[in-house]
Length: 163
Ligand code: PNS
Image (cartoon, rainbow, N blue to C red; front, side):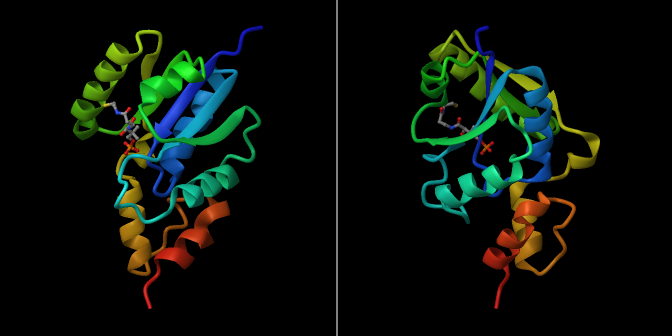
């Protein structure tokens, strides 16, 4: 049978339990999910290198057999075409995410009409969560246990703690 492939793209700097929630729910609906770190965004910023982000994602999705991890430098629409993906799946947190996500979805549809963008509503308990919030808490010595996968908790603390 033909693979029904979904792509979950992002910066993942770093991956949070909010991302894991979206990835696991996508993995239930598609035969294969590719989580891709888009490496051309935040070229000069970002706290973790692309390789570190990929490694952290791999550790965090090891329990999901139909999920692969990759990175790509280029347009998401081109990546989706290369991988013959039928959908780009993203989490939508609140109205603040909407305008930007809507713009990206329409642009990607224009660039690659074969691929649909689907939005999953973020689980209520993750509404407030973002990679930036996690980094801010970790860098100030706060507890991030509930916000990141257990497998990468220490990696994040080791990297971000000050002093
Ligand atoms: O986790 P983020 O930062 O919300 O992810 C945004 C991301 C990486 C999915 C988006 O910036 C992206 O797709 N970048 C790749 C470049 C691209 O295709 N741009 C055109 C679409 S507007």
